[in-house]
Structures are given as C-alpha cells and as structure tokens.
Length: 186
Length: 186
DNA sequence: CATCGATTTCAGAAATTTCTGAAATGATAG
DNA sequence: CTATCATTTCAGAAATTTCTGAAATCGATG
Image (cartoon, each protein chain N blue to C red):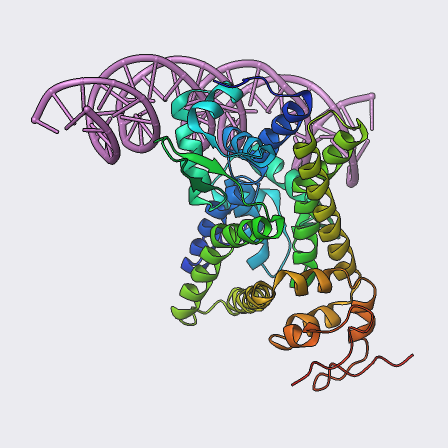
C-alpha cells in the first residue's frame, strides 16, 4: 500500500474539518473523510481512508454511506480492482449547490411541511400564533423560491451576480416594482 | 400565575422546533424555548417558560443564555417586576438576518480563518492540496462578501430582489461584465 | 447590612450519539 | 459451487451532550 502518512497541511485541514463536522450536521469522522477526499487528487478506497484517518473500518463504511446520502461524494471504479473508490467533485460550485440543497432538505423543508400542516388544521382560536405561523410560512416560501431561482442559474451567472457587489443595492434602489431594470438615479 | 397549558397548535409547533433544534446547532430545549417565545405575543419570564415546557428551571436558564448568545431573543423588563422577560423580534426578516449571521459566525468564519492560516504557512510541497485550499478560500470569501452586501440592503430591497424570480436570470444573461445593467437581448 | 426573590453555576445523572469489533452479507473470480 | 476479498450491519462500549437539583451568587429593598 502507498504512503499512509498525511502531510502536516493535510493533517491540519482534516482535523479542522473534523471539528467543524458536528456544526455542519455530520459527525467528526464524516467531516474528516470528506476533508481527506477533498484534498486527494485521486479517488481513495475505504481501506486507505481507514488507515490515513486511524478509525475503524466500519466507521469509515458508515461515514461514506452518510456522505453518499448527502450526495457529497462520487463513487468510482478502477479497472481490475473491485474495491469502491471515492472522490469529491472538482467543481466547488457544484459542491456548494449540493451542500445548500441538502441542508435545506434537512433543516428547512420539514418545517415548511409542518407549518402547512398546522395551517390546514384551520383556525384554532389563537389568532396571534396563527398569524405568526402564516407569516413564517410565507417567508420560508419566499426564500425557498428564491433559492430555486438561484439554483436554476448557470454557475457563470451566479458568479456574475455574486461579484456585483455594491451595484446590487444601487440597481434596486428606488426602482418601482414593475420596472426594476431602470438605472438608479445618481 | 396564568394558564400553564398550551393549545394543541402551540404544542405541535413547539415540539417540532424542539426536534429541529438539534439540526440547527442548538439543543431541543433551546429550540422549544425559542418556539414558545415566537408564538407568544407578550414577553415571558423564565418561570413561565419552565412551567409551560415542563423542564427544569436551570435548563431554562441555560437555554435562555444560549438564545442570548445567538442574539435571537430580547430582554425586557416590566415596571414593578424585577424578573427578566424575554421576546423574539416581531420582524421576521430581522430574525433571519440574525440567524444567518450567527450561523456564518459559527460555521463559516472559523474555516475561513483556518484556510488563511494554512496558506500563510507557505508552500509545503503538496501542490494539489494547496491549490484546493486556495480555491476553497476564494470561494468562501466571495460568498461572505456577497452575504455582506445582501446584509447591507434594507429589507424592502431584499424582498424586492428575492421576489424578482425568473427575471434575475434574464437580467444577467449574456450581459457583459462591465455593463451588467444592459437589458438582456430578447 | 440582612433578607428575600431571581438567576446562574456546576457536579453528577440521564440521554443521545458516535465508534468499534465481530459476524453477516455481497460479489467476483476460478 | 467455493474461496476470497470487500462491504455492511449491528450490539454493545465509549464518548459526548443535555438535563437536573442543590448550592452559590446576584441584586434590589427595607
């Protein structure tokens, strides 16, 4: 087997992602596996990951399963080798899109469903709570629709939008709703 | 003391937020306290919260402390009553801004710091990893800058932007970088 | 400054999550 | 079909997080 040692740079990066893992809704091992794959030019198999991270083989298996559930890794095969190899996509934008989509699925969509369900039950006589729930549902809907629109954009347009910087504000300033393209008054 | 019972609507909402709490980087009690305050028209004190949620007084205390660390609740006082009362802001946009800012602080900023630190150490001889780290740092910088710009917008502009829908794509389409305001060609 | 109510702290208990090793399952090649 | 290697499953161990009750601290009031 190849060299099992990680460079100090890799070590540091991987340990950091391990710590951040829990804040991102995954556990430490999942974060570390992801970080390792992210820094590896070539696909790695489970055995290699196990050795490099010094975790149990079964933990690696579960971590990879989890990363697949998140759509964050790609499965590859090497001719003449029957083991599974894993990589992360090269394109960082694709990674971010996936991450956002998955977090939305886990953190936002269930709440939207619940709010709709609560509203369907009809007025219960608690006007304030009902109004608050409706308002929250509307806001989440607006944000998820916006996310859908952003997601529809090709990466190049997205980057274009994101790098507009200060212009974004100016573009909208004082613009009447029906003609938002009008140049902002100096 | 007032009525300690929650309506079924409140119950359901609060239990849901308790479950979601963990996915949002807080624990169940914190999620429940937040949900309760969110649905309450008037500020509540710790004692009331404790009774309504059936948790220990100390747990409530810690939960409120956590919510204050997140800037998600406001402390209020009622004349002639020396207890602390808590509310959530009325404005949902303000809430979302806070939530996003706090999550960024916890989930993104530490990584940005770490990546910069790794780059500062200079080339270590692992060209691929170094390139990947630089690329990641650049992307995160672009996104945080974009976030800063969005944050600078007044709420009305933000809503305007978010409700633009399909127009967003059209606006950018084929637009040359130096004149992004030009109307897209039909 | 003593009292009383409100709040926080904190050590340990309880609950939950993560991780492991062993056994089971799957899959390919002979 | 069998042997062999790869992967998954899963019950329990280990680690971590959450929660509680008791004690300590805080802070206003007389």
